[in-house]
Structures are given as structure tokens and as C-alpha cells.
Length: 140
Image (tube, rainbow, N blue to C red; front, side, top):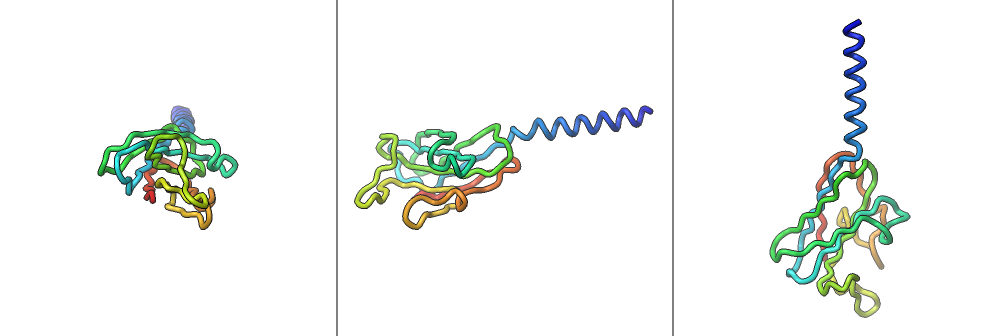
């Protein structure tokens, strides 16, 4: 009888710890190839194709010249995500473009995906988060 109670108690504790850890994942994004220290980096995490480049968890961080920049997103549930990064060099809150809509500020996407004539697709940029994870994005 005592063994049965301990076994059931062990199963309950294990199940609760798995459920509790589901929303405790941390995603660390390392942004590489940052040129200069002007402006801000805008790092946005998206959790679906429907929200892609529209609505996501956004963090704006200052830049230390000559270093990689790390940003953490905490308490994330498991699932598919994608990240977009903009180096907003003039801190005007948007990706500046020149002739024909070609960006004049550096940007990048998770998986270092690049779109042919525009931004990368969610499918090209997405990755699975099943625990703590670190990704690197090279901005250009």
C-alpha cells in the first residue's frame, strides 16, 4: 500500500513539474554583424504566420559598438517561432528604405533567412522551441 501511494505521488509530482516547465522556456537571440552604435536594435518574436511582421513581442535595445547583442525572451511556451531584427540606426521606429523600397538599414531573420524580393517568409524563418534555446542572426 505504501509503495502504491509513493508511486502515485511520484507520478503526480513528475506530471506537475512537466506542466509547470512548459511556459518557462527562454529564447536567447544573439545579433551579429552589428555595425556602429547609433540607434537601436528592434528584435521582434512572432508565434504564428498570421502575426508574421505584424504583431509580436518586441524588444528595443541599445547597441554597444563592436559587440554582439543578446536579447532574451522569457516564459515562452513550446511551439514554433520566428524572429525579425531591424537595426534602426536613426531611431525613427521604422526600417528606412531607398529607391524601389530597398532597405537602407540592416535587418535579419531567424535561420538567417532572406527573401528574394522582400522579407523572408515565416516558414523560412521559423524554428521549434522545446526548451531553452539560443539562436544567432546575422544582420545585413
